[in-house]
Image 1 (cartoon, rainbow, N blue to C red):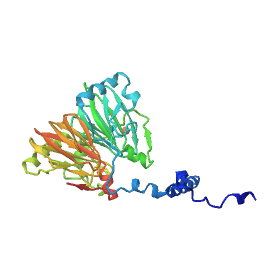
Image 2: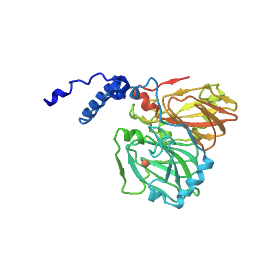
Image 3: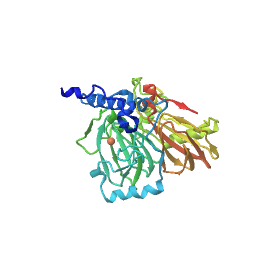
Length: 366
Ligand SMILES: [Fe+2]
């Protein structure tokens, strides 16, 4: 009979002439496993044990790279964009700051988007709202506004402006000079959850219902309008002005309240409950006094920094980035960094720390 000519199992081959594939029991195991993987793949299944070490690492692994965008290099490029497209046509005329290790993904860290926005005198960026939250940190110009839920915040350098989740916002520039600011949004986070909604208002600009500064006066002065809800998850203040915040850094310095990693630093807080200004993004403003040599620090939140005043340098991992006013740089999650300033410097910073804290996963270490 034909089948009787072959043994049921291959004979042990003479090692000199053996096919190494068949001789190697390891290969047989691999081949059997691969055949199994191929069969389960047809049912949209995969073996966890092949991926376990990638999925569960002993420490955070990041795909982000440290990077810097120097204002003296990028400012002219931002201004040049006005020759190519109007703010209205673009809806938002922004150059995205893409992490060099995450190009094409419109993000500066895995969870945050950042961009430099330009609005020229007379231009309007039309009213819309979306489930992504945004902040503006003003780099150059005076007198353009961001309107948020009926209040126009007139902006100046160093101002920190909020447009929270689903808050209607538009921008306009009635001043005589271009304005440039840094936008930071939680876009990658919202799109990770696949929860983006957006809509455009019929009118280009929303009606003005309150005076500039009303929200800061109503909610940021140690008193609250009677009947204010006690636990909003975002701040009612629309503009934390630099004029108001900067002198507090001096007071902290004079009081000797200097953190050995962060300098004299304040946290932008929700004045109603002391929490973060927004649930997905948290920001700080820090004064590094002349001669400051910060100690090494790291935390699980990748952090975007902006130099507002002065100059200095930050070592991130084994690279050192010198910075001056208007520069934006990013430190990846869980990467050591240390700031130094030869003369007084002010650094703004923002990260996804509130979201990590809400999930119970944020950690820091000296
Ligand atoms: Fe927007």
